[in-house]
Image 1 (cartoon, rainbow over the protein chains, first blue to last red):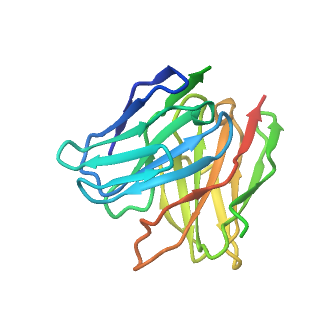
Image 2: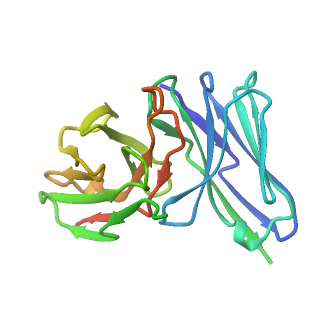
Length: 111
Length: 116
């Protein structure tokens, strides 16, 4: 079964700093989703990447998909306290309609 | 436009009891998926319902069962609760296109189940 590994597991950054979270798949990626989760709450959809080389941005968050490396990266520019939370990557396993998730990256932003 | 809603928000049960969790999908969506998220872990897929039938199932025992109603809402039932069933249960809805559901799944706020 497909496994998604995220790095780092946790991250503490000072407000205004940039940061990158990585998600690496053990198998071919057919689509990669990024979600954000506040502790104990539901997942908020950030963006979806489907094609190799695709890059999407939403406000100060940019995500890229590298099909050859079977990897996606999420980059936050000029981090703010509102960016704090758990970032989860998820992917579909071929034509199966279930999402497999990584274990998440916990982000803290200090003032 | 209402998003995905779940009820209840919190629930406390004792071992051996049974529980029912409820989910209403986002307007226009016809597919509901259920996930279990243990503390510090990513969500794990339980099963998915489409056209009132279970389409796919993850590695969960038969104690976990579900149902989808004609209005697309869904229930998750867990029988003979174990301590290990304590988790956040998430419902996600999506829309099937071309018979294959790889469309974005939108999640509800979750139900926190504690088994004592």
